[in-house]
Length: 123
Image 1 (cartoon, rainbow, N blue to C red):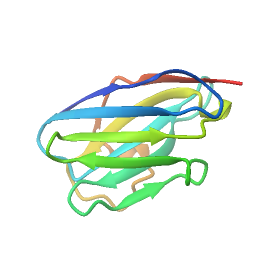
Image 2 (image 1 turned 90 degrees about the vertical axis):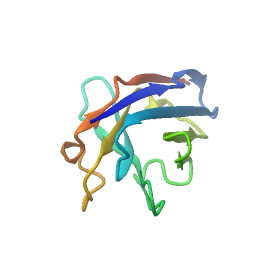
Image 3 (image 1 turned 90 degrees about the horizontal axis):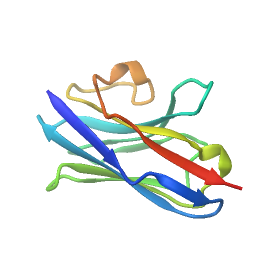
Image 4 (image 1 turned 120 degrees about the vertical axis):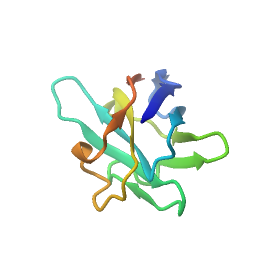
């Protein structure tokens, strides 16, 4: 079992930055990821990282602006979001999976989820 708690969401102006954190407890996951969901839209992959090798993957829409990192000592994953745009507005969810993954970008692959944190970017 894995429990996830997100923090760090909020309201920011376009061009600003936010840092999301996801604190995990329980078993150590193979991979952790961030997804987001805006009202009326499907859940969208943002970024993922493997805990041991530190392999990362990013959605094209955030590549170069967002950085995912893992602090294994604290069992926490961070998402640094820079140059935020209004279209980044969404509820951001942290996800984790214990088993080895072939597809980081498919949300149904992940068994464990946090409660979500709201990110709002004003224009």
